[in-house]
Image (cartoon, rainbow, N blue to C red; front, side, top):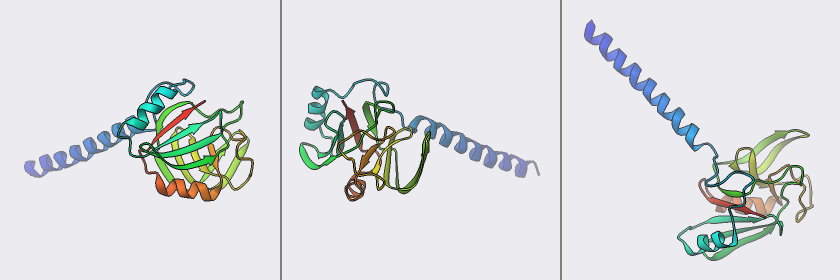
Length: 172
């Protein structure tokens, strides 16, 4: 009887430890920027050149001053698309991030918006994502609530090309 109770405790404690370990991993991996704070300018021209020269296989550059997204494989430009970044009142965060989750479609809600079926959504920092926008055609102009909007077909191409963990560099 004592052996049965002891083995039950071991199984329960193993399950408990596994649960705790999963929570800790999730906590530390949840959409934190690689360097800096959301409002810090860490993606300078020098760091962009360093990324191009290193072995970063695939990475995304978002230039808010040009309202342009570029997708790179090392030094080779794969895609270059006009975007709509965040308005002055709801800016897109600046810095180096990684795509942490991808959704074929996703409902996006916030202050003043509730949009169902947002296509090809790739979150890179907290609630900020690169995604398709079917509700406007003002690409090249900052109109979003901080996300990076693309035409749907271009968002689909990028969604298929990028994977979770892909580096995203956002600069002014």
